[in-house]
Length: 409
Image (cartoon, rainbow, N blue to C red):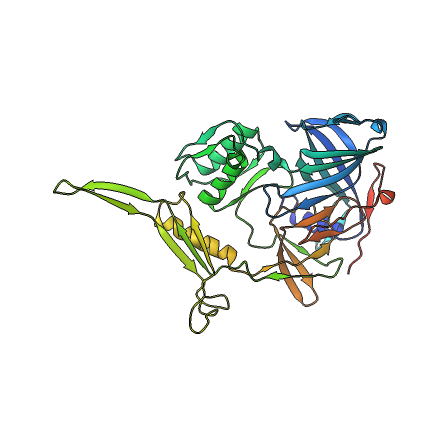
């Protein structure tokens, strides 16, 4: 979740404003690939999508007005004071004015919150008269194709290696990678094949060497972080009834991790040679509870639900044990698929956890899939993708403030 740089009192006032009826603006800026201003667009409607199982976790679908170019049939479209094409990025910013308010014993003066909620290149563009529809991908799209060769050498600081790969091979300059001392256990090579793309290799370093995830955050920073395990925000209410489904087939109760095989050859006193192969290996399993092997036993035969990992990045017993414990902690839960509707929240990132309050208690939900409306016609869907944009007849075609009327379920 993006840090908005607010005080605790300001954050309380901002969320209170966000979860009540309010006016807001969506700024649509065209940028060069160096992220310098190149123009602006007039938004009619659109939405941001968060998706699971893809390298590109954040996409956007927007419709903009281009009355002056309504007869244009070329492949590149002039829109206002800029041009959309493969050499441009589009940035979306949600802007809300928070009036002066009392928060506890603190009087908070009026302030403005501008949240960059998407930045990335266009993937497709379609024109229908004066309306232009754009499909956008986050900046991961700039790094998922193969490129010229580059190797991060064994022993390089892992975080520096990620930075160097993305900076030298994609031109990235916005990073939130933190600091650490872990060094690469082996060399990692970037190449022309898509499976050796800068993003694939940098993500591999993040997961294999650091046990972390690499994502592009909502404001366009290459961000390295431990996958969130605690809630970042609480939704005070829902705007529609919740639904859910649960997949019992995804759980694991046993993890085995094998590290790099090492072969050594030594001479004996008689002059012969002896070859020895060693490989660090460790396991982790649920000891008790309803998912333990014993609890799932049939006729006394324990049932394993294993996950087996082989990774040359790990060369010591401590490393493979750490990885086994880490993997088990992330795969020993039933995979539920709850779906909710909420007031749109623009500073969340993929895989953040939100707490949903209900009459019977609360539930923590990971933001693996979501649709966030930019217009006023729909609510944010959590747990699924759905169309939350307005029909053409209901679109706001001006630059004026939009008004979101919030109705609690």
